[in-house]
Length: 172
Image (tube, rainbow, N blue to C red):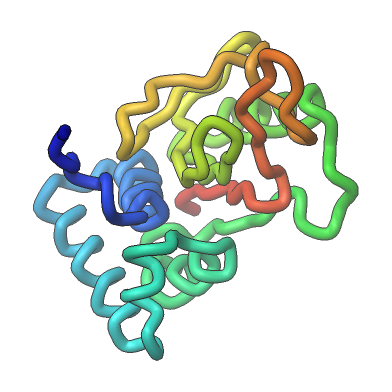
């Protein structure tokens, strides 16, 4: 029998992804990140039963949106669901839009919902033609483009990226 590791029984990746995105954007210290983590936990604790369900079941996009609005608006004033209300883009379009946003905006990050191999929230800090580099709470370092899709997982395309749950974030 193997012991559970930290994170094995909780679903805090959404909270960590928000803290990590804020760190990329504002270059905050570890102490400031701890304060932000505490503020997010306090916000979720005030909401009816939200903290318990998020700890065990994870975050939905609506939870991310609420935290961005209520806790992070001053720290990350630009918060956009870039693909909301549009037809799901193919991988090339998605990749190109994320790449353009990150290259055009110095203090920026992309919050990304994924499934397939992982049911997870993570942060894109860089993107090249072949790979997405991540700042991730579960030690994911990168996702290779050849293993990603924006539709159904097929063959070696095991990482499903969710454009409608992708937040473009930056400071003003």
